[in-house]
Length: 326
Ligand code: GDP
Ligand code: ZN
Image (cartoon, rainbow, N blue to C red; front, side):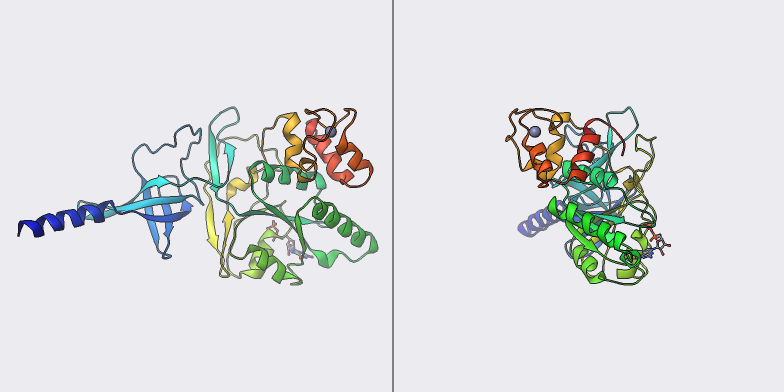
């Protein structure tokens, strides 16, 4: 009999400490919705003072984080408690306040940023696209570019402009797709690009982010907002992201904080690391610390002159190097 009691005690102890693994799909700041491996959702909280050693973040976990959790049985009720956070593949942050060294993690483990751009109504500048791409490179988030509203590309000038834009970004190594949300052109390319991936949507207001998502996933009702016209230095706003599942597999990260996605601090001599076509020439200029501005023996400038690196990308690089807004 004693053996059985001991067995039951051990059994309960094991059960009690058994943890499951899942992904945070929603956060309110105090409660986290964790989706487990069987597709079941659990409302979890963090235990006491859960801090990541060395982290300056105001929120220790964010949407996209992989976590361990277990169910605690207390006073008749059950509470799911997050006990561990897995290493992140990447994450994006914004400063908690303008001058603060504290940061707010918007989302973690993002598979890709999907930059939506348009050549007309409104026209997205290459400067804007390049700043977003630099941010993605800095955060190790792969990026693709979707040119929407291709139904408006009717004149030869527009066709030429679209051809040039696609050429600039595919030569730099980015996958480009051209679609029309309203005319439902090439939407399968867009849907395929999102399939089974966790995607962060980025782009100015009015480029058709909501229309595009609704076109491939009717009724999803996205809250997508524009990023960064105002330059992000920002006041403190507590914003929490949400991961919205797509029926074809994958998620879209919907976050009010995306407005502020676009801020990175960099050292001038490391900026070119965030331009893959320039990074490829690493250490091949005359000077090791070449900023590719006006130094002699600069291979990057040679490539630009020979048309092997896009002049538009290079000009925007120089603009960022000099701290100009373009
Ligand atoms: P968001 O601010 O990026 O979410 O943009 P919306 O989805 O709200 O779209 C802004 C406007 O652009 C709306 O009037 C849409 O009807 C229009 N729009 C979206 N996609 C297309 C497109 O492919 N072609 C054209 N001509 N208009 C579009
Ligand atoms: Zn150089």
